[in-house]
Image (cartoon, rainbow, N blue to C red; front, side, top):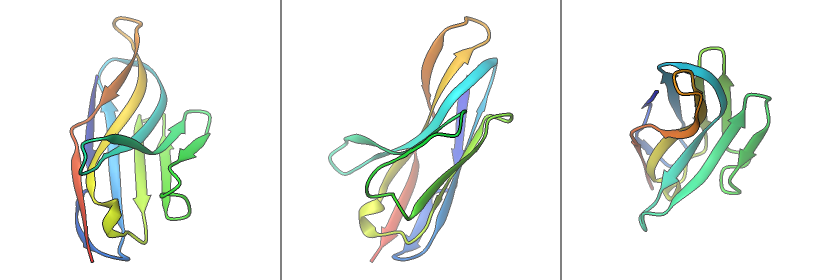
Length: 120
């Protein structure tokens, strides 16, 4: 199983970005997909996540500005980020909780990070 993320970039304060993430491979079921951000102190923190049942969780800093959407039939999630601020800057990692069809094991999977930089 692999996660492929895209959509980062350099924007100005107040602008928007949309991140995409697609899981591929021998997937039995994708239970949750989400995004984490690694900040300047190298801590990785949750930004938003979405369960296959439609439940969402957002970091306080993301509420009201970011929206996570998903299509679990295609194992794809998007993070729409509006009204971006300089403190949103960081490397964003796609994450998914997936049961592998080959092994029947349920694991956390991570995509390669995508850089988001918001200038003031």
